[in-house]
Each structure stands twice: as C-alpha cells, then as structure tokens.
Length: 272
Image (cartoon, rainbow, N blue to C red; front, side, top):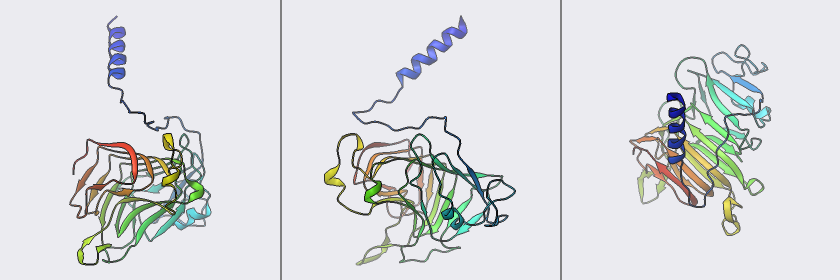
C-alpha cells in the first residue's frame, strides 16, 4: 500500500508541475530514436581514409564529414581531449525533430573542442568556427567551442524554412570576440556563441500560426556555459520558440543574451 501511495503521489506531483503554455507548442523529442549510423572522429588518432565507423577507425578531420550525407538518426562522436582548428561548414538538413542528428563525444578527458584560432583571437574579423546550414532535428551535446570571432552560426535558406528542433546542451563557449560593432567605438565588439540567420528577409510577412513560415521552430539551449564569449546567444532571428534554461554566462562583453526577431519561449534558471 505504501508503494501504491508513493506512486500515486508522484503522479499527482508530476501533473501539478507540468509546464503551462499560452497557445505555444513546446517541441520536444522522445527518448526513443531510430537507429542511424554512428561516426567517430579523432584529430589525434584518426585518418580520413578510415571508414569512421568505430573508435579504432575514426575519421581525422571535420571536413571529412562533408563527404558523409548525415541523415536522421546519425550520430557523430568527437574524441574527448582532441581539438580541431578551422572554419567549418556543414549541411545538417537531413535530421528530423523526432529522429535527430547528434554531435557528442566519446572517451575520457576534456570536452572535444572546435576552434578557429590557436590561442589569441584576431580582433576586427568575422571568423566563424562552425557554420551549420539548414539544421533540422539537430542536437549538440557536450562540446567546447571557442577562440573565434563568432562561435556557431545557424543559417537557413528559403527552401528550408519551417525547420524544427535544434538543441545545444552541456556545451561550453569561450574566448569569442573581435567583430567590431560600431565604427565610432571600436572597443565594442559584436560576438556571440550562437547566432541564427535567415538568408532572406521575406519570411516575416509570411509567418502564420504555430510556427508556420518561420525559418526555425524550436531552439533550445540548456545546461551550457559561456565565458568571455561576447554573448551566449545574439538575435536568434526567425526563431519561433526560443528556450534557454540552466545556463551560466560570465565575463561576456557584449550582452549576456540578446533575443529579438523571434516569438515565444522563455529564459529560466540562468545566471548572468
């Protein structure tokens, strides 16, 4: 009877504290995900001639991923402790909100890191660590991004408006700065860990209810940290449903978070 009582109490509590929304659909993915292909990548132990399908035969470079058409359910595992330098571009339009493409890690050590510069950041430039085109059903979990003028830029073209569900979780962004914002004050820099950009401005007059016509429906940033990164996120333009939870933003010289050009969502349990 005690067990039955406890289960009933837990059910009541779970129903009591379910989040309430004002006509907005919070897009979440289920824990179950169809099995795709898992690729491994290691700068220290990899070779682009490998098949990338196991820890013993990983790819070496991020560029090698451009030869792999990532599709729904695929996972890319980056080796912990490794660092990749460069300005990378990937098309991640092949995911689905219920069957995502996942970037995560494997092995022991520090978070795998993607960087543009090796050390000090070159000021006055607009170098981006990682450009992701038309991300749809994409999760980045447990990676480190830094030493750039901008961190990650999500870019959407008109053919891929209505993309759904992008999540960053357990990621660390740092040492991101250097884009001059105002000509009359070169000491102010526009930099951000994460930005969203629509290639055309004609989406706004066409948007409808429940996210129809928006470039991206559902951007989630949770359990992430940003240190000296300009801001955690800047102007997620064209996002229907922006959710940032349990993040810590420190020593960022532009803003903690600049949120405009979107509709709906919340920022909750964050420290600025």
